[in-house]
Length: 68
Image 1 (cartoon, rainbow, N blue to C red):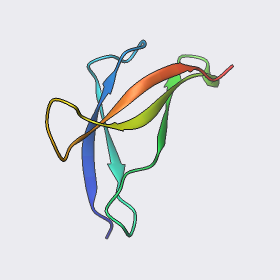
Image 2 (image 1 turned 90 degrees about the vertical axis):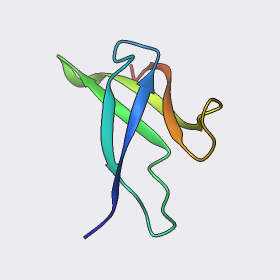
Image 3 (image 1 turned 180 degrees about the vertical axis):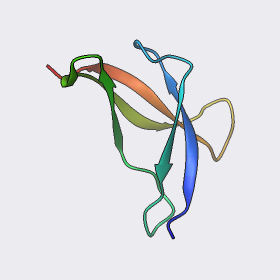
Image 4 (image 1 turned 45 degrees about the vertical axis):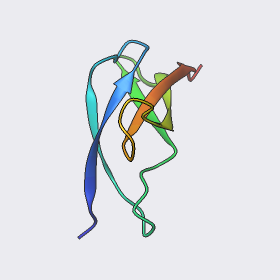
């Protein structure tokens, strides 16, 4: 069973929410997260993985913009 981690979303419409993602074989989460809107994937918000400047060794997903 793959390990999981909770990562906060920063910025955009999902600011303050967290997502649970699976870690890869190198213990890293996916590089991006597509946060689905009410209209589904066509209006998803794209978040990019960043290291958390406030807490060493942790990650955040930072908002980059809409998918469309």
